[in-house]
Length: 238
Ligand SMILES: Nc1ncnc2c1ncn2[C@@H]1O[C@H](COP(=O)(O)OP(=O)(O)OP(=O)(O)O)[C@@H](O)[C@H]1O
Image (tube, rainbow, N blue to C red; front, side, top):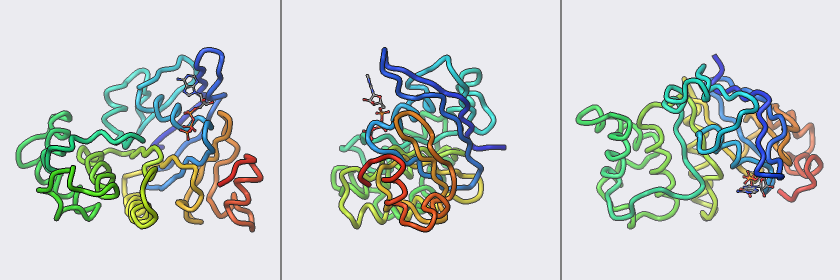
């Protein structure tokens, strides 16, 4: 079963056509980058996949569930890290995560076991009792990623999660998230930064609301650097 299938999806903001018949699909257990310059339509696509926006044109299926027909099952299968942080700064890491677990109907020992496991996956366990306000930007982001894993989603969506971070934090998060894409978890990472992508990664190139390519980064690069290939395709600076 595909982790994500997007078929002929269109979306307009009034006169502005943001997505023009977008189609692609992702296999389970893969890391895939959604690569596109500013304004390509990445956030619009994420909003449709999380039902912040709806469209009557096209179909989005997550782990076999059509998001229009079975929204509850589809949304239960995704974990999301939005561009803007959504943490309570005055709560500890654990309390933030417990609150989120409760929203998914997970409590007690089960919640604690899942929180510990998710923090371990992001190397954040030793921060569990600190207030979020005391964490640096990179650790806050790692915590948000850990939080998005508590309910064991099949698809993890991250919308430009390294915006505003320094180089070392960016690298740490990029490495961690690449390691998450194993077994049943597919990672879909929106970015306009080519250096966050490794040659083995799958890449969907989005430009002005259209998918220009879907392949491994190595194949898309085609013997040149991915930056050069991306710039040649989109005219954008990477
Ligand atoms: N609320 C809105 N009203 C009108 N146009 C919008 C709105 N939101 C986005 N757009 C337009 O839709 C297009 C796609 O925007 P979107 O934010 O999805 O792109 P993006 O790839 O996420 O860009 P960025 O990297 O800058 O976030 C752009 O042309 C943008 O100007």
